[in-house]
Amino acid sequence: MKASFVTVCASATVVLVSAWAQTKTSPKIHSDSLARVEAITSYCEKADPNSEAQYLSKLADMMRGHSEDEIQRDRSTTNYQKAMEQANDTLSKVKSTSAVKACTEFLAEK
Image 1 (cartoon, rainbow, N blue to C red):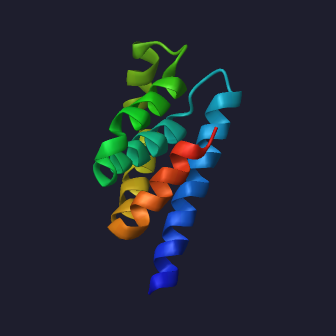
Image 2 (image 1 turned 180 degrees about the horizontal axis):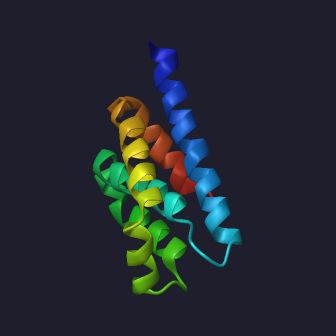
């Protein structure tokens, strides 16, 4: 059972890092990447409230250079909604003891 928590945390981190890398190198935010990063950021804000400002800063960095209209269009897509649902489903399976560690690792990523 303990291994599954580590696996879920590792998977969430890999998804996040992949999404983060994809959006940093692309001139357009991909709606599924945006959903994953927003889901993970929201989850981490709750799991590690002392670092909430840092999570918000990471999200703001991702959105920098993109208009609010672009972000809203992406949020209204089916891809965004599916990715958000999948990310939230995965994150709901992570125990809080593993969550803080994974979220801390997320903050450490450049």
